[in-house]
Length: 423
Ligand code: BJ8
Image (cartoon, rainbow, N blue to C red; front, side, top):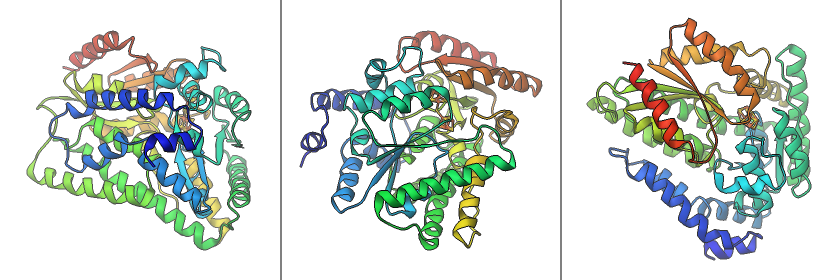
């Protein structure tokens, strides 16, 4: 069965197949294939992205044909371990392209962030296979836009909502523990499989291995001669959301072996004196490569993202010492509530501490605080980001954008001036 036949079989709008198959490789080529000195192992990630609408969806469909289930989620607060422990496949739901936004605007106010609009557009317009394949969609209550969008999405898709606390007191951890338990019951009903101590323990190890591999990869970005571009590192983090976790871990370790060789030779991908930039703010879902492309074609290199599509994704491991299911769930709650410093929390001093610590660890020259238009959470928190960075003597610029390319020239000018100002 070719990709087009597969699309037909899962109820996709086949007319968009050719459009997407043309648009994605073109965007990918502009940003990636034009780069020099990419690690050879990037070929794997190029291949996964190049056939993002073919290879991985067919694996998910095969899993379903064998009686398995596929569960999609939109936020890194939702623990993949629960899905894996129930014998299902967890996948992130892509929502980083303008391609899906007009579809979302048919249902949502224009003044909604592009990430939410693209997510709904992908489902309702039947233009993304991942949004057709999933047996269950898991939403969370991180922001108002998402919360209300899930009600609309539930008209067409089977949903489970996790109510995330917005503070981090003891009782909030208890609440998140009970939300994870409810989620596990839902997954057991969906799959017909019991989540056991053994399956949960194994799942925690699988996802921690993935985090360990990403931590290792990111450690090479701290070097003076950075051996991998920010664009490539971003791509790897984006692929983390939907690739098979064990295969992904192997490939990330493989690329780190290659980066180790580069380190031994003192080989870096950036020009000598290139400014080291950290990005913070709203996530960059695949295929949103706009900011990285502008920064890295303006004489700088992105060495760190304090984002869900960056170091935040792998920052902390789940404690592996839990013996009983209750202890393991407690450890999951601790990691998935305590260690993720999304702007949905109040107060959120830990995020500011993260930004300052990472800026030092990765030896950054400047920080770009990115806000996806209409995201109030990150927009308002930008006040503290800029204030505290100024106090720490770290240059910072706030940028607001969306998924279109309309502001590309203006962004180039502003970012170029910022990089120049860094000296
Ligand atoms: S943990 S960042 S993945 S919520 S950009 S939809 S917040 S209006 S994406 Fe996020 Fe989880 Fe937080 Fe990370 Fe709303 Fe803002 Fe849009 Fe956002």
